Length: 127
Image (cartoon, rainbow, N blue to C red):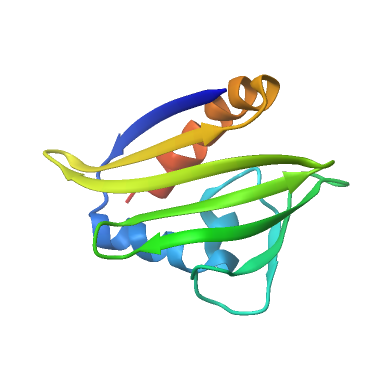
């Protein structure tokens, strides 16, 4: 199942993009993320790691694509043998930046994750 959402916030595109680029900074704006284990500090295709959420929740991920020219990136998250692909994009808007997210995965995940993701994206785009 595929679900998409977008959120608008006052921060500029470059600031939001910088917040995406460094996985160790994800917990600063994504409340569902407690920490991130990666071998390299910067987002790049092929980067793998583990996102730690609430106690007992850890999911592996692989970054599939990063395009800094158009501020997009995609990754696949795997938990309990289930893969969920997510694509993020940022565009300049009249009132700041629009952050988009497309989630492709099993219906329970595609339906449950977007509200939590919207909260994180609002925090990503705040001043």
